[in-house]
Structure formats: C-alpha cells, structure tokens
Length: 161
Image (tube, rainbow, N blue to C red; front, side):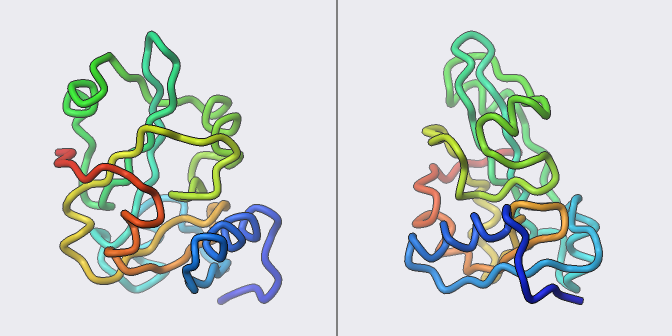
C-alpha cells in the first residue's frame, strides 16, 4: 500500500510539515488520490474529509488564490470574487506548477514554491476531526487534525458554497 522512500515532491511537503512543527506523516499510496472520490476510496474515509487544494488566479492582478475545500463541496467562485474584490479564474496547469511547484491533482495546502497570500479555508472542514490532504503527487497524502489547518496555512475561514 505504501512506499517507504518518498518521492522528491512528497519529501518537500514532509519537510514543510516538519518546519511548521507538525508530526504529520506523508505517505505515498499504490492507488491514485488525484480526485477527492479516489482519495476517499483509497483511504477508507468520507469524501468530506478530503482537503481539495484548488488554485485560482485573480484576472486583473494575476495573484494566486488558494481555496482549501471539503471534498464534497463545490467552490462558489462568486463568493471568492467578492472576498478578493476582483474576478477570478481557475488556474491552468502551467500557472499552478509555477506558483506551487506541484501538478494539479497533487497540490498540497503547504510547501509551495511561491508564497500564496490569499488562502481561503472551507468552514465545513473545521466540522471534522481528521482530514486528509494531497502531499505533492497524485498518490501522496497526509492526515491532519482540522484544527491544525488554520495554523498550517494562515488561511481565512469562509463559507465557500
């Protein structure tokens, strides 16, 4: 089920967790965790426990915006636009890799190549005790307490749906 030696990207995330003082352990699985449903099935948890790290960019200022959403929720982009004060668009693969250092499907909530100043956390994630988040590859994940998500990211808790 798991590899003992982490890939380069998963190791970046593991190091970022250590630097934040969390003892979360990154694991790489033999099955894909690319989508929230895949991850929940592989991990044997509820889809709601999966943290989707979705990157957007502001249309005019080209700023990255990270939304950490519960796996069962769909992001209402109008809410994020209102919070940011400008129109947003979903980040493409190149923008995502340039900003985070990771490919879509493996973007973690931390450990990004560039600092992301605009992070929004789905309030529904805080209703759950244990969460699972991507850790740099479509097969790597780590679990954390929902209470650690705010400390880890410095994000703003919002209603995203």
